[in-house]
Length: 271
Image (cartoon, rainbow, N blue to C red; front, side, top):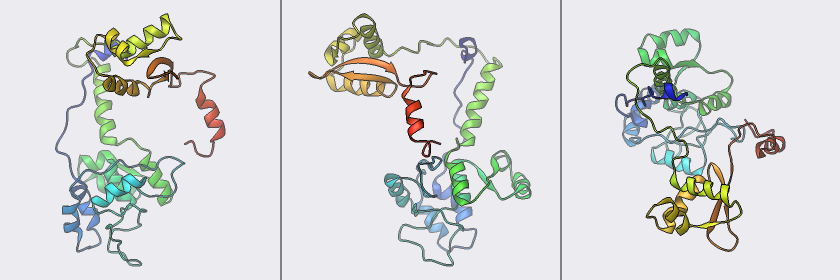
């Protein structure tokens, strides 16, 4: 966003209260008359883990890696797969973890309202703005639909953020002075200046803190360097704990970026 537009940008304000998994899914979990739905909803009193599954690397429709499965189990959800219907189940008993979610339930957790077809979507729209705005028809089988949902940005968040961006582009409200320096991190500034002046010289944590004018111990400096390492190549000295900064990791059109070789070697896994 251009600086003269960004001056009008305001982050979205929180709207309403956060609903637990139980509150959100109770109507769907009890849709087939499961007698334990209310007790289950009381246990499922926390916030759902992140819905994953949009990547081709992910296998079938289940609710994520081992850590996510444990988090779902604490909410009374069997995360080892996605079921076709809400409980009770006709062909198998419920596991000790609890019921499995359906694609419709996963969609609701992600902020969508699952619609079977256009007629169903029109019926849902009559139930209020939440249903009208977020009703969506997902195509394909269960796994395909799950991947579409897992790869989607939650639509209520997208709507809120998009509205704020649109308002800024329309210059709504009053402009505010912004610190538009993207390189404001003093530790980054020290490392970048060193890379410019003496690119082969490493700096210790103490030297970095001193040059940045910060009273930080070595552990804190190293923690902040680890954060920088997500965006920049951080090179450690072989002789001890000293550092220098390398290239920007993100792809900005470079012909020699590592992503090209990765994609060539992993075509079947890259979504």
